Length: 100
Image (cartoon, rainbow, N blue to C red):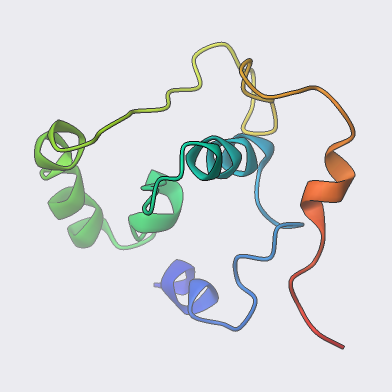
């Protein structure tokens, strides 16, 4: 369960470590003033097969109750931007959240 151990560390969701598609999804959710965002890669423990299977079994309920589902269909990797997000300088959205 190394994935879970990593995510429990301070600053685990540092924006410099998140893929572009996740950052874009956060931006879309924020622009729509949504309180919650489900990201499979972050919400499902990836290296615990029992947990992963249990969560996958709940996808109908999770997505069935969603107000909006963001799907990255046109990308070639998780660092391909979502087409709905501006193509400007993304470096400003990748600032570290850690404090010195």
